[in-house]
Image (cartoon, rainbow, N blue to C red; front, side, top):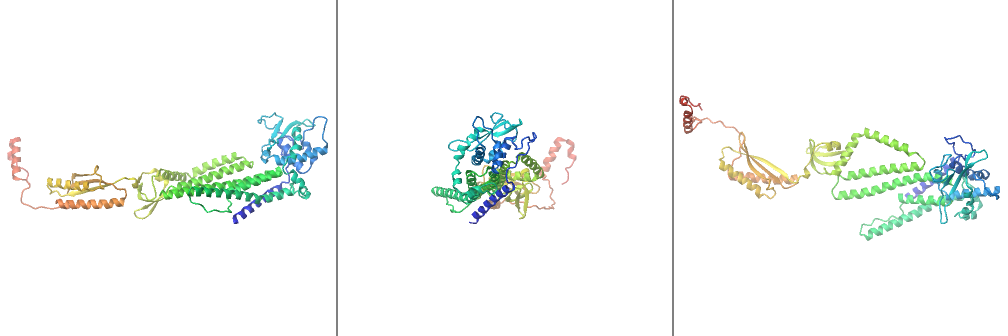
Length: 561
């Protein structure tokens, strides 16, 4: 119950702020002079806005002799008396308070010419009202000449003739007549005491009604989840969230409008309420994005996609920021603030921030690219540039690698996106490439036999890919005959590969030992012998060949060994 108390306290503070605002401005001041011309009318009737606000100001002060000067003069023989006109002014004020929205005053023209784009004649202006089951009460203003020939705006006689009938149809007219005169005649800041009491009492009532509606919706959702076989959430009977507050504020505003509260104070109340709406709307958007983010993070965690949780978190924060900016601009626009300058300031500020934080945004976009393309995941063995290790974390600014030396290397995501990235997790097989060095004193047939036996070892291993495996005599090296063993092991995990490769190499060692082929060792041997290096028979054959080519070659001797 702590939260409802806090909400109630906030409501009282909002109401107090409205009262304070009204206390600072005891009435509607005369409209300020328009920049187009110097005011020539003491009552400020040069513009439609000045006429309406001037009448409300005079009637609210019960200065009815001044209020009737905003009326168009009656035509014809029958002219109402001064008392009838003053009573009509009192009724018109009540009708305006209950049949005109506060937003209609904000749209009134401040131009002496009025609005020329509303489809009406140039000398007419309409103040839209609220309709009921019978009809809509609209206020028609007409532009005419005063005694000195100046152009002024007045309430048309057509509108004034419809006021008595509309006043009799007001919902709270009879209630106000039945209330004690003390509550209706005494006023606090130009508003009857009974309306102040009704406004205060409506706060807990609106909150209670909104809470009941929210409870009904929670029960309906609980029944739906139960019918679908989904987990049932715990039922909270007394819970006030942003949706409840929004509904309560709307109901309270509707009630304040229905009881005919002064349109002047409804303007201040409306501004305070829009601030409240903006706060509650931001709270609601934050609540929705948090719930959706938690749901998506849970699904990503269950599927093992740990790195993409950062994208969800970033999207939630970006949505919250955009919602805050949009709701704030709407609230400022409603309060009469020129948001064009604010938008221009946001654009310039965003450009300055973008230029100053270029590297930060580069790393941020690089992190989003890594997470969305899924080129890396947590736990992947990879090589990024000249760094090799296992991915421990993928953030929005950097990626962390655990190296083989057990150190952690932090690489900015902008660099990760620009360098060559080698991901070992995505390989479908691992290459086993070895070189066996055989001794030179092996006969060619012995070497052929050893190679065939080694090939048989590869063919008999089910984890070796047959189509790409080979065992070939590669080259004659300085001190050994080199044989290349080239084979792909059909596994993805490197540890499993090492185990299979170890068994394969041991089988090859056994095969070499079984075939009698000896592995060459890097060594040097010095032979001291009296025998010539050249075979005598081959020497005779060489001399005979030379004599056939050159007859004088018989006197020449072959070089000494």
